[in-house]
Length: 444
Image (cartoon, rainbow, N blue to C red; front, side, top):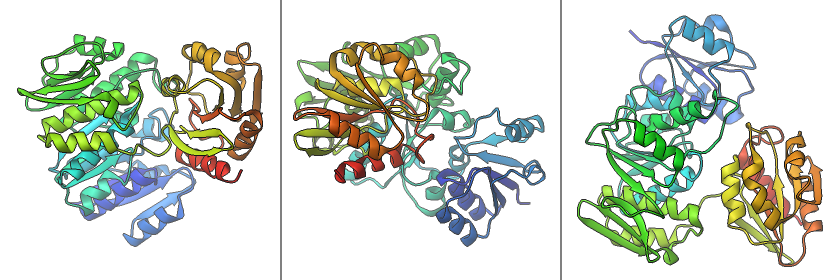
């Protein structure tokens, strides 16, 4: 007998889950407390799935056999609390899709670097001729791909919110880039967030692999206190390892199963310390998968990077504009500021996720000559940097931010959008913020 599957949230992941559940012959109902985008309504209508928007009808939801919820919905909302009280399993789209996929899964998480690493691994695997899809936090819903495609491998970017709803899921290769403060508004302190990230290794066996940054203090501490069955492959800029990746005389060296890969860091397409970590993680995963060394080297030296991540937009009258809209936490912005020259006009702000800006003070003092606050409430940014940076301007749109930055900048200066905050106060998401920024630069 078919199960009643209720899906909460009708974005990319929710609609993808509906497509897969419908294909599996389940009774499906989709409920979104907000408004559903037209393209998703059209998909739901095409597969004849009942849906509602602007509300949650409790009677239609709390008779579910299972609930698949969007990662954006916190567990503390009333409908989720009531479902859990009733004993209805609440899972993520990723958990659901995994039941129906036999593909090999390379899964990446971390506070920073996960999208670049995910995209880079997918690029290497695809270039080498493997039948590979990309999913999770990037690209098309994994559930929809499981329903409609027949990939042998998936490279899956996983946020902490997605990991929270995963129980029986197992990564064949798990990659943890780092753990730095993020989403502390949703978790009960740093340990709750850390525990969420460490779910990337749940259910792994000695046949699986765990690739992690050995320079990240939180990760190092967590690895030391846990019993981990998977084969551990660390990467580091400071230490040398018999298995894993390290740097020696400006050479990346990756060792795995008596196999050694070397490449000069000067030849990497992606520059900066954070990108060296991303390249090392991708290189180790590729070595585990026995990708030819020439392919790994070629891909690491010509990869073009990710939209909205330190993306060079245009140079206008000698002023460089850089879109780093994907920097939605303080640590991401730290990497961005660290890689920038002096003479910086910094566009920052949005929805604060419990940010502590103190780690940015030294870089801001050294490099930033003006701050443009792009958000509805910029009081915390003013408090953090008001005594350090003389010029601070508040704006409410990407267009005003760019015009103000252009007015304040001089030939040779750089304008950096690196918000350190979520985007939902003024924009649909970080992509929308980045695209509006780019368009405003082109309109100058």
